[in-house]
Length: 190
Image (cartoon, rainbow, N blue to C red; front, side):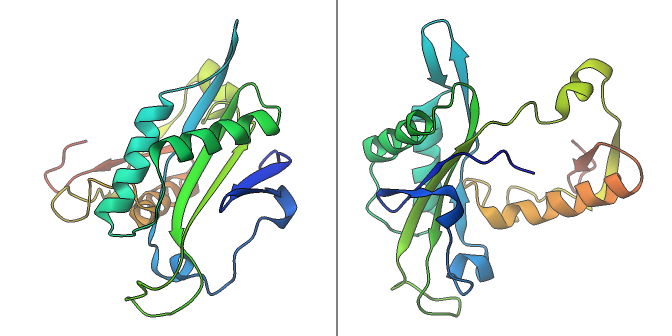
């Protein structure tokens, strides 16, 4: 379960965590057309530092361009909003999740008139595999699912829909008693 913060940035304003929601018919929920980043912030001796904020934000905006999502987001605007989320939530070390997605409006695979929205959440999140994973190690298993090849899927963008394969692989190996999945490509390479 997430350790909830107080605020989430949604479309140019801060919204209380519990009120940050989208309509059930939001286009991206049905068609997977959303791009995101996963960013960490760390407490340093001179304050909080967001790891490679500019690079992550550039990749987020580039992913939106690759996916032809439009939107009038700027590098500075998204970076400022990201910093605002961390500061207004009073977080020192945290995980930050900016996401650009196609909002509610038309349905079907061509919804170019729908609004393109930006949300940014931040919350405390320890190590990905937990403290026990760091101290004792983890058990990994090669999954029966094949990793998407760079020519088969849009590898130049970090798209929500890309993660379906990884989720299925993780569920498969967790069901077999392992902690993490290893996916091979079609040539049998990691």
